[in-house]
Image (tube, rainbow, N blue to C red; front, side, top):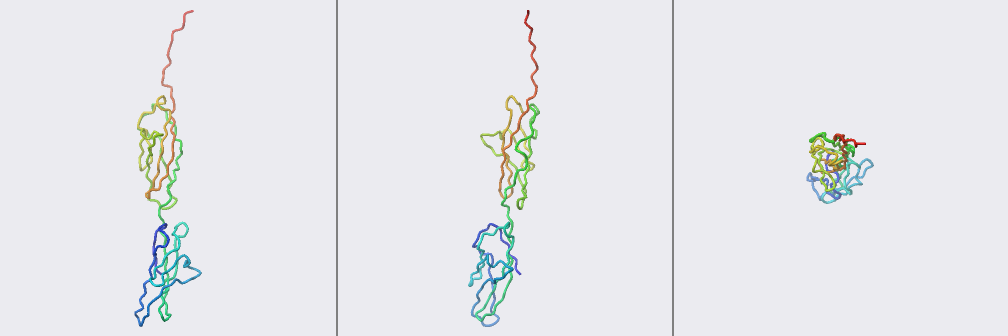
Length: 211
């Protein structure tokens, strides 16, 4: 048996295997090629060129649908003598599913005047939908959010507020986090951060009016 790998989603009608035969042991009037139909193989999912021996799938390979195919090729000379070879076509899984962001869309509220450069949110993502080579994190800039006042660690997903929060100046922040896998599949989530107002103004004492 011969094993041949191809990547999923690489397209139908591609040549995935070519049969080569040697008929020089005696006289020869050429060789023709075919696929052997059997109950236990996938010959129906392929076609073969009888002259060149090129085997072509009739559908786009999808690992999640079928991870391997088995078929048997036949080489037959003009006298009816034939030889067979079992072939296994292994479909390689590729990263095609975007990570999913599992952290909440609302960050835990923080008190005003609690200090700049504090971590206010951590992005978490699940990339187990197929193969994964890791996830990186970023902030998506938009006019409608406050990305310019935040930074993010691309490896840990920690979002840091670069300024000291002040409820009177800004009672909440809105930003969009992005999780991207090595294949470039992306997921986004908008996050809201509320700033808690604290008692920071002393009471004022006024004189009582004379009666």
